[in-house]
Amino acid sequence: METRAYRLQMRSPLHVGEQGIGNEQTLAYIPSDTLYSALVVNWGALDELRATLSALVDPNAAPALLLTSAFPCAGDVRLLPRPALPLLPQPGDKESVKTVKRVRWVSAPVFAALTAGIGQAELDALWQGGQRLQGGAVWVSQAEADALWSLLPRDESGEALIWWSDVVPRVTVDRIANASQIYHSGRAFFAEGCGLWFAARGEIAWLERMEQVLAMIADTGIGGLRSVGNGQFALHVEAPPSFLASRSDAAGNRANYAVLLSRMAPEESQMSLLRAENASYDLVLVGGFSGTPGMNPVVRRQVRMVAEGSVIGSPQQDEQPPGRLVDVTPDSMPWLNHRIYRNGFAFLAPAQLSGEGVPS
Figure 1 (cartoon, rainbow, N blue to C red):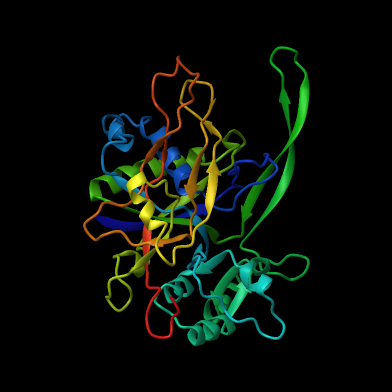
Figure 2: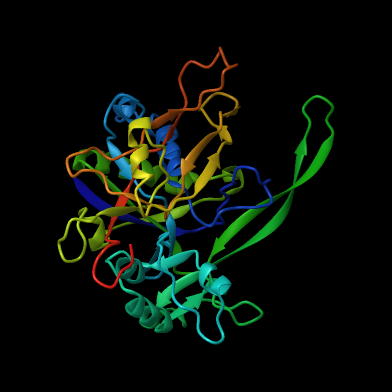
């Protein structure tokens, strides 16, 4: 098994909707299940890969590819979801707990420090020595902030922005009554030199096949509103962060917890991972439409998944990654000639939550 990282240098805006919110809103990242679905939908369009497509959607087989979500990046600074750890920096005189909890993303060095069994004193020093960007949502080191100052644009208040969003009006026309109706769609824009990145793990042959599909998606786009040019990117293959290489911490010790870098739909037998003593997780409701080439979009059945950044118990070394493919095929679509799945296999980063000076 090999792990590679991929940078998507965005060449146009991105629209990724969220369940329960209208088109007016968009995520600034691509969840792993959305990314996997985009690969599956386009996989069969390449004649030389069509015969291998069934292995990607076999609910009874081990996953051929494991994907993280595609997270924001700025230059060489990769962001990851802030781990849902029990430790929080102690707020200073001018800071409040709300300021600390506003952080949604952390850079790779901050993430590695937070998941290496850091104590409260070291955590406070890491917080005080870092910088917050994107309105307080992004936590990076001082060195990373210094490297980004000249790269990132500023908003009216002088805040450095890696991405920003706007809402644009659009018009739909009823095909029967020929009546028009206005609606609005949100789009995420990324600054020059910024975009998204994700990691993938699998056999080299599967990674190379995926790269063929990604090269095609780079031009056709990913996410929503592709018909108007959204979601296009330039693809770059890179080395992954070192802490994704194993289930051990930086010192080589067996990690007793793990942080989700993807969404996860656990099997019933894997629920003990969520019941671990220091587990901390959020759930997200996943729904939306499924697009099949040559067919009208259909509304998928909804499923709850464990969100990125959640902390769960670490599975055994010899176990396959937790999670499963979830069948979300609508009940009332007898004309649909295939099943629809949502990828809920977990991509894990090791986390050491116990040790000297670290409360359990």
